[in-house]
Image 1 (cartoon, rainbow, N blue to C red):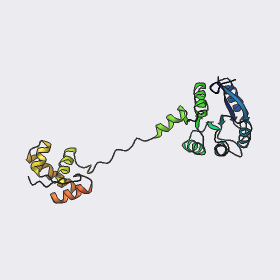
Image 2 (spheres, helix red, strand yellow):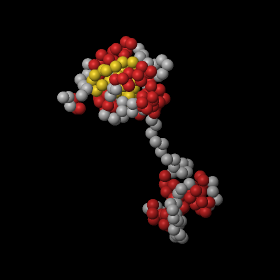
Image 3 (cartoon, rainbow, N blue to C red):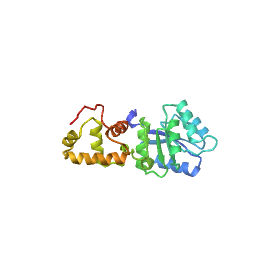
Image 4 (cartoon, rainbow, N blue to C red):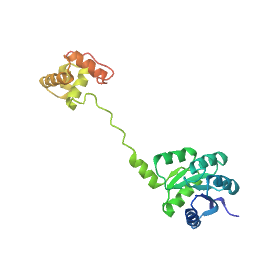
Length: 226
């Protein structure tokens, strides 16, 4: 009696191009642990053959006449939720990838993937995992923009001037600001003069109000007259 671990992965191939379909069938049949149990040329045939042969995985092309691979995947997921769909196609645009995954596909590979990658992906989707081939994953990751850095308040100020303004917005007097930043009191006064000019405010009070509106000064502003 064959143990479950030794049972080959039963595969149905759905592709409207006979040459491509036969080539894929020959490729998969040559892999250890894979058995091609049926083929289909249309989405409708894929649904019918899947119900008859009950494969573990349907290797699904996207572009097929009448019912495309995305719609066939959607219907297959509803009819036979235990059957995994692995999309293998030339289409690599984002909309196609997203549509296939939303329809219920468990994997997405580009045609031309290496044998080892195909076999690994087949085993993974048959085991219930979600897999995106390296070619697709690398391309999508390459298009992701890095998270934007949070905008600094008052970009016209230097880092030191922003530190001074932050402490002033906390309610610190010039002496306390000087002590916190290890500066001379005259240097703090000079910084404040420049800050007032850059922010176009008339003095300390207006600068503090503006600073707090932009998130400077923390949650508390201890009184400090020094």
